[in-house]
Length: 441
Ligand SMILES: NC(=O)c1ccc[n+]([C@@H]2O[C@H](COP(=O)([O-])OP(=O)(O)OC[C@H]3O[C@@H](n4cnc5c(N)ncnc54)[C@H](O)[C@@H]3O)[C@@H](O)[C@H]2O)c1
Image (cartoon, rainbow, N blue to C red; front, side):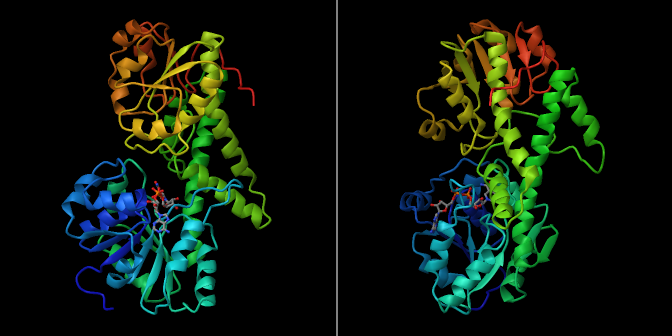
């Protein structure tokens, strides 16, 4: 199969967050893209213009390139039209914390012998996966099949923008045609391309996510010390972030990280290290701090409300972060479970994640608006920093509540404005009335 000019057609296997954005992004750059998924309903929906996820700009891009995007459940369609098959299937955590590679292996097994195709791994996989896939290819007479590691760094909520304007593109390969072909596809983007070996590329992804998660847990621990000492973590982070060596990003204290990537990738790296005999102590702490951080909200509620039995708690935001409907590992899941176990009644509002949330949260009341959620509440907790929560009429909110406690889990409101409205403000790492007792582990 010759690579036609000017843009090479590609296949994308797995049309979830990463796969669909990758497909739409490459379509925008001019490629025809054959998108494959085992989920027949998803493929049928996509053929009819139904986008299964909420991601800014994605629906528009898919619609714009309907002529270039081809959806199928049959991998043969991708193999027929494209030599590069981008793999974007899920790699969720197993009970042990290792990455579950069963979907990746299903894709590998489905490949026929070929000297003209390559798998391009976008899924986040443990270091060494490329080597084991190449071994599997060799054992099954498919050693002509090439393998490239091209980890994905997009962020949900800004995934389309991140695809088109990446900080860098990392390509790990064995120095054959496939790595060059992938580099050629990305060359039009104004981004540094890091060419390296497969294992190093795999490790760049895991190390990057582990580092970002470490930064979050670090600032959360600083915030917790600020609560004990009376310092304000917002001021502290601003002062720290001006140091070039530290930088201002990922220094926002809050109620912990969630989502489909950080928790699983941190634990996968910890397990990967452990499996090879190295005890990655720092990551143990990063994970534990993150778990405790979510639970500190409960301590803040108890500090002001006493027993939570029968209390009406309004949760504003449910998605793991704004601009997405992704509920995987969202802090709201831990909070609802803990609050319900403590006897509270939950009213929850999220601008886009309600449908996904309903699949995971039972016994809560979902409301149509933030205003409806807070009416009659004893306490309000901002869980996800959706911009609309920054615009809330705080005086009206205070009037409609039964109690007067606002826990700002994302430090998005001005404490003075909240207090002027007659509410009690509890942020994360911000001065408040007295310290917060550490949660019972
Ligand atoms: N979501 C993110 O922000 C993000 C960012 C960077 C990297 N990643 C990584 O990318 C990978 C995909 O993540 P996601 O969030 O897009 O997952 P997802 O669950 O949204 O999508 C995975 C898709 O793969 C499909 N699939 C599963 N097995 C298949 C098979 N054998 N053949 C064809 N399709 C199959 C599923 O039906 C689903 O549609 C993961 O490894 C993840 O860690 C995710």
